[in-house]
Image 1: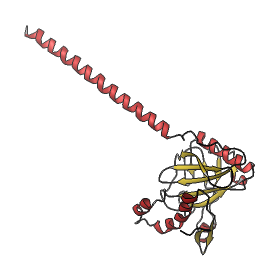
Image 2 (image 1 turned 90 degrees about the vertical axis):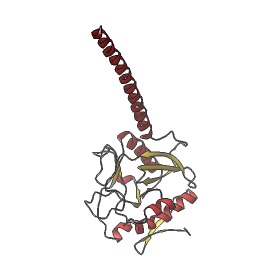
Image 3 (image 1 turned 90 degrees about the horizontal axis):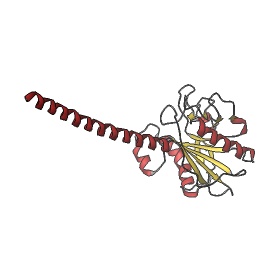
Image 4 (image 1 turned 180 degrees about the vertical axis):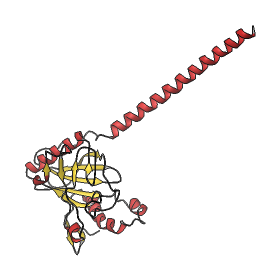
Length: 243
């Protein structure tokens, strides 16, 4: 009799264990699926609020810390509207400006691309050169070349996107340049330059440099127009910005 009771108890324990196991695995699977779904959605840009047509002008803004490449457009040369925000697949070297050839640092500052800087035969699927070094970099003796926005999701100083995303961006950049835009400004910031973010990075060794980028960021935020940036006395200056 005791043997029968013992076997019954064992069977009950097995049944309860299987029930608990199935519920736990189902719960974990459900959460994994939810996480994968969220990651998949967040890796691709949302549906655009506007359409970009031949003849529209483009502006590209990158925010390093947020892994964002924003594509803005205007049809009348006045206020720019956000077309899409793309996830940057990877960049290298962390925050701060590029200074030396071979440091594998992704640049920050004010650059532009044009038709001769497009490379449809890139080993990274498609690419366009951002024009590093610019006048500011040369004035400070910074070195480096072939800094791109490209596909392939691998970086040694470039901003790398996934192949489908760079295909979309490249086609729009090529269209704008073929339709008359002489160059497309590419402004690269370490992060969204809000007062709170600036305060959070107050102790950074690059803070003084970031202060020189902030007027251009603020100008665009206030006007939705691309600032005209020049280099005077080895410093960036936004034409017409009062601060």
